[in-house]
Length: 152
Image (cartoon, rainbow, N blue to C red; front, side):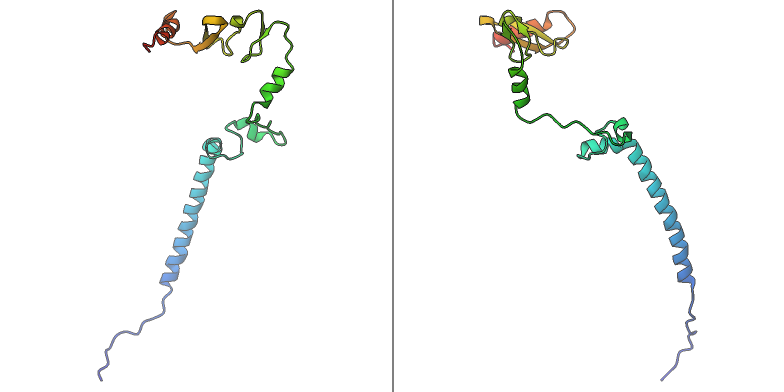
């Protein structure tokens, strides 16, 4: 039996010092991470809420600051709101079915978004509203005529 003359291991606290040192730097990293997350949430919080269905602000930063104000509910997903408005509309002549405007003749019905649409009268008192396109006057009418002929 041969005994090796290795030095007897001495208990050391060096690993514990490393642990304490690393926990201090871990705490710094944690604080930096929390600060960064707070800044990101402040900058993009409304975006994330709107994109992922959160209720905070609906993408409007001023709403988040108004405590106690309630958001109006969404319109119903059926036509009941439209039917209610239609039933309570008063008109002695012709009530336009899409705008609820009261006009003398059906072809006089305005477009719902007349600043962005052009009206074209078709046969038998019908009319269509088409999005304005192009920069030249009459370009939308040209496209409607091409579509009538089946060329577009």
